[in-house]
Image 1: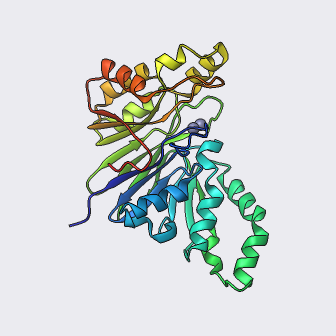
Image 2 (image 1 turned 120 degrees about the vertical axis):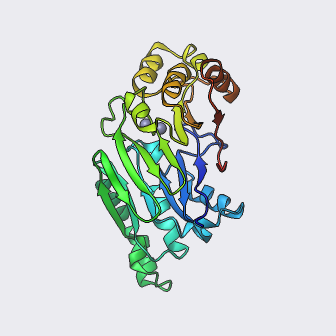
Length: 286
Ligand SMILES: [Zn+2]
Ligand SMILES: [Zn+2]
């Protein structure tokens, strides 16, 4: 029997440098193989922490993290890219990394490899003699539809609404025992309802109405265009009826040092949505 699919939350944060919440990064482990979605700051250290807690699928030094999917090119979702390319390689990964994501990902990877060229050459041709193939990156720039399939998972990408970041995706993962949808960053969109209807787990971003009411007009307009409020998400989840709704990427107050407690967001959701909902924390496993 194949092992149960697991979701490992490697980073549940936003651009705000919250030491308790690394940048967005989520791993789905199917048949013992990890598939990463987004690589925010801290991604490799969080994978190492998960390994230490017993999630052996990442491998020591995250060397088994070989396939990744990117929702969009915002910095909070991509700052971990050099870390993901280089650290597991230095720790022993010998296979290229495969990454699937929006147009512009190839250029970003090319620039990262160029930026670290001196170090890479040093490690390949110097005393370490690391395997050059292990820091190669095979990039696939994606369009909506089925973007990946192997014996463990199939992955469908669908467009979401993230303001001026036009090339932004959500993903649906199907594994032998689970269907999992992850929103990435998005304002409310029917696409989430269409793809997550009756799924096992919907992982969705959200901000609380409480913090929305306290930010400036500029940040209110930004949030409406780029992100989803608790009330809007409650409507989406009521239509989609996921077995479990996982909240992540809880928006920072935006330009002001306002408190942003998770129970406020959760209370708002629970008042408007009767299904099963939890706030995810870094290193939670579902
Ligand atoms: Zn984000
Ligand atoms: Zn974003």
